[in-house]
Image (tube, rainbow, N blue to C red; front, side, top):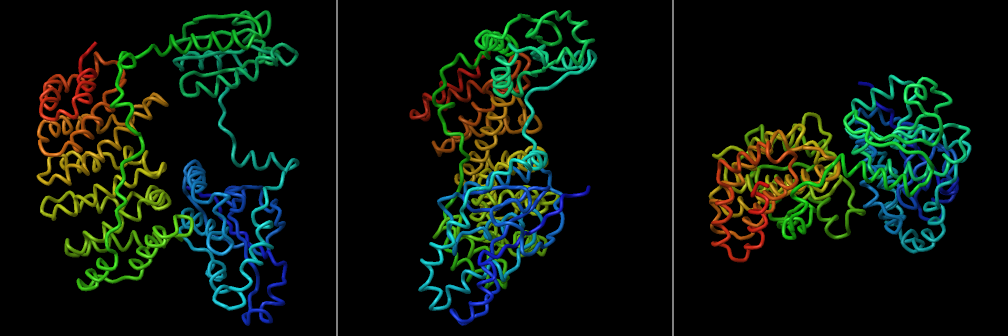
Length: 570
């Protein structure tokens, strides 16, 4: 597969003055005050007034002084765009710092993700090089005051060339256009719910309905297919459906016409489309239930952010003969992130870190040496950039190695514990989560389900947290897009959770998470009467299992009652 080229654009904010005057003022030769950006797929991305984009060379900085070819990225475009979107949480406008968190930190992170390469060190090291001089420290406020308006200026409007950017990053299309009768018939037959707007270029009233139709198309994207037909350009369609006036609307469910009406009234249009959606997607039995304990739980992933004594860990690893520069860099990244926040913590080389972790596992390092390494990995994975990088690692080599190692019953339980916590932390990355089910589902499910029955209570708690994170994401996809993303692992997970609930007699927190996860897995399951999940619940007497826990853990009575409501077939 051919990837998209990645270019590093380098600008000199001093316009040559740094080269001429740096030796005189700070006693060092500085060739430029560097600003960088990344050009990917015809769009220039940079950090100033937040994460911004432009056509290449179209920013207020003008044309770059130098262009560096960083290679090609074979990552899917939607994955890259989602990663850039996730960086906006770190690179906010108010977080910009000319010396500590600037455009070059952003391009470093983006290049590492796209091609696994660092930008030139003479660029990333420039701020510290200047601040190491007495004059640089003295002049820091003045330098920031003079350069901030340049670096954080808003994006330049690009009216003439806007189409180039739009072509590079096309908006999602919510309305389809049919130009032939066969095309329209195919759309109606192959989609569950369809709305067709028959219009024409000469129809003035139609323009009144366009904004509302487009708004409804966006609102119900994924549930209903919205189509527009210009009958002036599709005469066979107007003949086939006998359209004599515009605007005319037809709605369909499973290929059968539900309704039709004429007129451009936006309220009528909205009312009829809402009726279409209600009929196409009747209210699920579960939506009539009051479930505040299950549905009121935060859907944010459960994470493990405790930082261990890193100095002691490094000393222990050194004693065991485990030393590597990348280990020190990852620890430095963790400490800087903890002390100053994600925006000031530069990512280490994650290629080297991944290779180091695999090498320790495959090289037969002792378990007491691998446990702290995985624990360091756990803490680093809190950062969304780390999770996003491992989401795109080829064949998930590193995570597969860690999970396989932790799944060995002969290994100390601490290894399994920190691995479960590591997997929980990876849920902070929106890029990573879908892969958990598509590629890592079997390994993930096997580790989680076996750990729910572990003899150690803290392992069971971590496993219940992972089960919650998995089912919470599955519930979100079911609610937002009617997707059943857990199909491949839901049965195994369900059986283990019911058994785990039945056996848990020690920890109310573990039981609470298991009950909530069970509720989220079952809530609004399609076709309850024919559902394999509910058939399994019935055969395992899940309702009786939960009822028994209601009497053992009085504080969880309300949650148990809600799960029992879900388990009662309508």
